[in-house]
Length: 365
Image 1 (cartoon, helix red, strand yellow):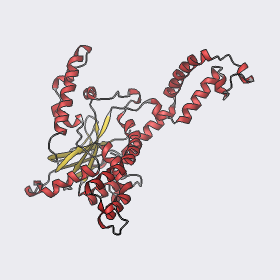
Image 2 (tube, one colour):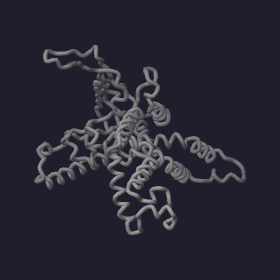
Image 3 (tube, one colour):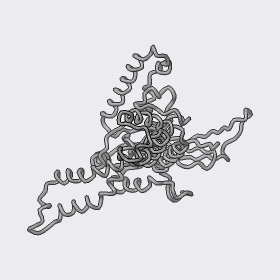
């Protein structure tokens, strides 16, 4: 959820043909696709309609044109990836402390520490035999030790800095806004709905729709994480799940504080039922619709991606009893089993008919 205006819940449900993809492929690759589209369109037009004795591009085979298109997008995809991952790393809690400081800030830390240590290099002097060097006791032999002490001190300064928390939480918020799909027509905040421009591209160029939702990772599931989760931010780990689907009618219901009530135990409560009539013919996918996925996956450089939270029904019940060190070997076996299940599903035939339900709850405190 990208906007918190009061106690509210949003539930969306539907049945659709779709394929799970990585948001860290879809987002950056869509950005690169939009950036390079004018050049790619010109390339295709010249290849198809170019005329004249000196126009040789029209002689290139279609397969080679596709290779050129792919090459044109490689660097923009890489650049976009690092830009998107900066916020996603903080959102997932896999960021490093140093990630929240730019080079100038780290150099300022180093300068301050060097001065406090009496290191002449910290005063900006790089000539060892000048008068500046006489005022300090540094020698070549001591510089390595100073560097080790300095690195340790910088790490402590970054750890204690309040700025890193501000940067971290801002990036988490910016990530939620970046993948926000709220429609512009009901958008009370101009910074919401940032993914909307890519939704339009998906629909106009590929005839597909993205379904994006954030997913909490349960405490018992953190054992499946491939990265070390940073626990210093006092927030449970989460991730962002994404599907590409054939546009279909999704039923959505919003409940605000007016729809909730306080029970006898003073707890906020609420209940609702959603249902919709499904036309059986809408569940049949045509070959033309199936080809939409193949074209989008090829042109956007995507592949099926399954996050382990999408396989909660496959999580062994024994996992929840694995807390002691003696269970280490069993945990390794279960993690391998989960990874195998994920790979099997990713490598199976897509798209598949699936039931999709997203639910968001917001209660500012």
